Image (cartoon, rainbow, N blue to C red; front, top):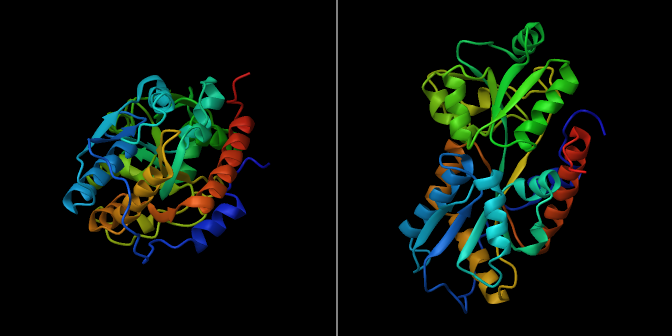
Length: 335
């Protein structure tokens, strides 16, 4: 495998062919929750997962998609392992649903925690998330300037992120391999905290999801250098005074051929009933049709997608294999 991080052809095919929204009307479910439903977030406050969970909470409640209330539960302890073990230990409890990302593949490999996503019940993939290389507003204006400055620095550039041996750390390692620049990776509790550290000049750069740096980008406090995807972010509405998400070049356009996409998916604990699983598949498909979801996709620069059933399982198996390959090449798999 090359030093570039590339999505598999199967993933590209899924993104190209999968329907964004289904027009089919689901039959009435035979089961629905009668007590509060907990959306479990494997991260700290202010990060992309927390923001998405709160969007879903609002969409469900404002559109009366179910009778039971929704609460957001932050369980980012031990780099997210707290949430994974919490879900694994909740077999049969259909009032807990995890909002998952590539942590479900990476953390068991790097930390050897007793967890596998197959221990849970897949519900749906609801979006794909991209990563952007961000610099302080007073720093480099292009990727080439940034790499040149990193190479010329007397000590490794400080790169903020949200978790050691995770997506942003993997991307940092691959930037080192491709450019020869040296970076010192500093993990923080959330993408929001990583953004704050960049604004305060405590780090030189970070690799963050668009949503996690949105407000400081809009305020002119950081600069978006490139997006780690094979294509630009599609949204063309201006976010800052001069730029839309679509104005950010791909890293490949800037001479840095590194690509990665991250799933955003919903899982129930293991050993729930088919009726309970069906309820949540229907619920989150309805969420993807709401104005709140559509607005969030554009504002946070996410790729909308909806996968369920065998199509979701096929995607998970292929994405798991891809992430394991990347973790192995980066040297992050625990011995």
